[in-house]
Every structure is written in structure tokens, then in C-alpha cells.
Image 1: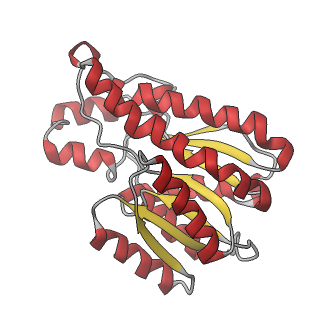
Image 2: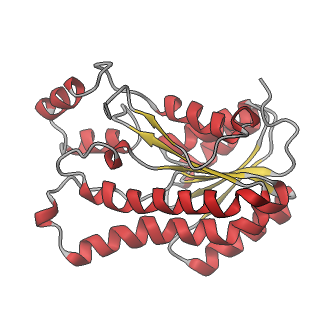
Amino acid sequence: MSDFGDRAGAAVVTGGSGGIGAAIARLLAERGSDVAITYNRNLAAADKVVAEVEAHGRKAKAWQLSLEDETATAAFLSDVVAEFGGIHTLVYAAGPHVPMVHLSKVTPAEFRRQVDQDVIAFFNLAQPAMPVLRASKGNLVAVTTVATRRFPVRDGLSAGPKGAVEALVRGFAAEEGRFGVRANCVGPGMLVDGMAERLIGSGALDERALDVAKNNIAMRRFGNATDIAEAVCFLASDKASYITGLMVDVDGGYHL
């Protein structure tokens, strides 16, 4: 399968050193795309993803970047265009750690920090990318959360900011479609890797909570990062050339 073999430029995956971002980068490479990734602190994980992309015969490079830095983010996009000749796909798979806490216990300062690290960070990336995506008739895919469709208790620090990201994606879809740019979201449910893996490891989700979560899923099992990567790569491919402004739930039926 070579969905991206004839695409000029690269796919950009922010958060490419994380579980979901790494799976997306690997699958994009497997299907013919060069890949640029960003990472926050984990250089070793980023280097591993670069090596995995290159093992598929594709070009790859990693940049350390804080998406909260508006100037640095715009400069990063310019660097990718200079390095790869353009950007055909922009994947937002970054985001802060999300503590599991009731909204009544979240301070305004804590909520503002999550918004800065997710909503503002997303806009810092997507807004300056639009001229580049117009040039390639490319697309944007944001990885958000199924919590915007069915609220899990104690997950407001994810659902609130990600809901704002989804609204912005719909806005870009509505405004940029006339230039050939598509914008969509993928909403992960409960996974065995990525953010859920960190929450399980930290004890924020104990065995009882995991059992309750599983029983709320129609398929009675958790997904994995590859499930999310498949949806992202589909939406980024020409197979989805008439799909924009869509939220695809990859959650085993949790939203039902």
C-alpha cells in the first residue's frame, strides 16, 4: 500500500515521540510518506521513531519543540518546508499530560494551563500551516478524544480543551475547503498505550476503574495506538478525499 508515495513534501506529526504519534509516523512511512516529527523532552524516543521511518526507506527528521511558543512553531514549519519541499499532511498528536480530577477541584490556573498547552498550542501550529497546506492541497488531522462525545467522570481537563480543538478543526474545514484543504479529527477511546498507559502506570486508573471503563465499551476491550494510526492515515489519504470536518470515534463503541 502506497497511499502517500506520490505526495510531494512530508507529513508532520507533532508529538511523534509518544505512543500514538509514533504509531502514526510509522504507518505514514510504511505507506510511502517522508515524516517530520516533534518531541518535547524524549530525544531517545524521537530518535527511535526516526530510525523506524528510515527503515521503511523514507526520509525523517525530529525537532524539539514546544507548541506553546508561537514564534518557534512557525519557524519549525518553515524549516520542514525547506528540508522536505513542502507539507502534505499535518497531524496534531501532541498534548499535555491530563490529570484525572473532578472539575470542582480544578483551579482556574490549572485549567488555563491545560488550555494553553492544548488549544493555544494547536492554533499556534494550525494557523501558520494553512498557506503551506493550501499550496499542497493538503490536510490536517487532529487527535482529540472520545470524551467530547461521552463524558468520563474526572476527564474534564481533556474533554474541555479537546472540544475547543475540535471546534477549531471544523472551522478550518469550513473555511479552507475552497482551497482544497481538508481538516478532520480522530477521537481515541480507552487504549492500552499512549495517555492511558501513563494513567494506568501512575495509579490514576485502578483495576476497578478499568473494569468499569471496559464495561462501558460496546466491544468490551481497549484499543491501541495502531487503531488510531489507521484512522489518521485513512483521513490523510486520497481515499478520504471528499471527507472534511468529520470526527471519527475510534473507541470500540464507547460513545454509543
